[in-house]
Image (cartoon, rainbow, N blue to C red; front, top):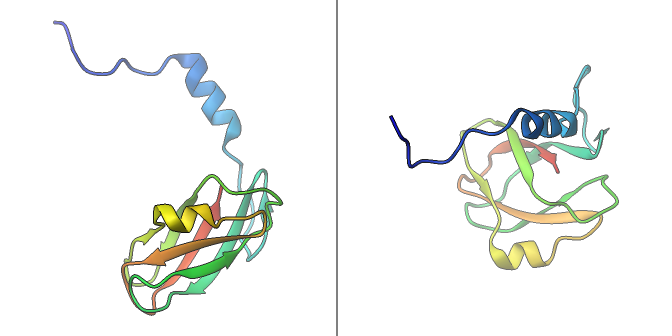
Length: 107
């Protein structure tokens, strides 16, 4: 049977990706560096859709983030304009839920 979908990743591609993911062996604390990633924990979001600034310890402009905790199930997102303002110490994000407590891995 022939498939027209995407080909599965090659083993070398999977190994390369795996080598970039940090191993987390202890608690994640605010402003911690985890390999080349950084953590921002227990952030209280403002009103839904309102921009908020997150400090990070990367020392470079982030590529993105992973939300690993959301108390109320909100989605954290950034607009194109928000991303233009990211710096080596801060990034601007928004949430779909007001007064949500979120924790992020900044990558």
